[in-house]
Amino acid sequence: MYDNNKGFKYEKIAEKYLSENGYKILEKNFYCRMGEIDIIALKDGMLHFVEVKGRKTIKYGYPREAVTKYKQKKIIRTAQYYLMLKCSGEMSCQFDVIEIIIENKKINHIENAFWDHISSVY
Image (cartoon, rainbow, N blue to C red; front, side, top):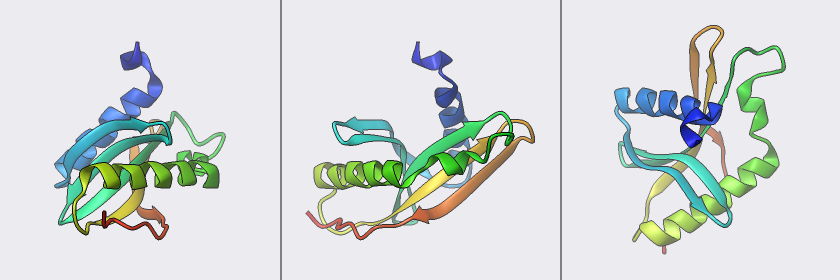
């Protein structure tokens, strides 16, 4: 069951964090054949495509290190598809990473973690 997945638990923590910090959650686990985006949220007219990564400890590195260039490209392609489907007109957007480290109860929101020239005008 998806509810027992560790990633799902981290996504619920990130969703709560975003909601408490003024973000409106538009989509969770947006999926298409190009890939998946964990959370799509809106704040102050900015669309945030959020990748959530978590670990119990940093013994094997920080969660953000798992967002490789390959993963970034998949997220960007998926975001382009989302914009084509859902947005009419121009929309400012950025790619964020939320890393969660259970050991020290840390949530690190890395805004504009990676960037690409994507057009949001369709």
